[in-house]
Image (cartoon, rainbow, N blue to C red; front, side):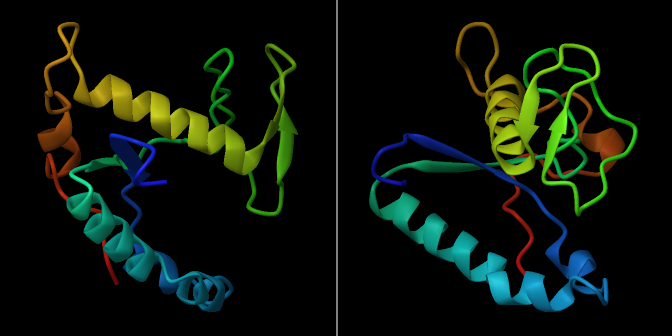
Length: 135
């Protein structure tokens, strides 16, 4: 993944907060998110690649990547859903990945291709250029 891509966009998840959820904590801890982010970061540095975070507030799973419609609610047990506007059928994770890529590209590049910080980063409390949370 790192060798084949110049830039890798990752969702800046609040892993420490997610582990506090009693029903999900074991699955989240078992996934080794912090270790995965560390390995990706090390490999990216080795191959001179860039890892950029995307805001954790992006509703990546429940936004239709075809038309942009955002669902009001999407419970975790729902793995596939159909957009009520354009009727596209989405796999939750593939849809989220497409939205994270699109948001990463939109947040970080202006019309000339220069890197920029998101304009509302201070309002949300995000740190521009920060790395994903590691718990």
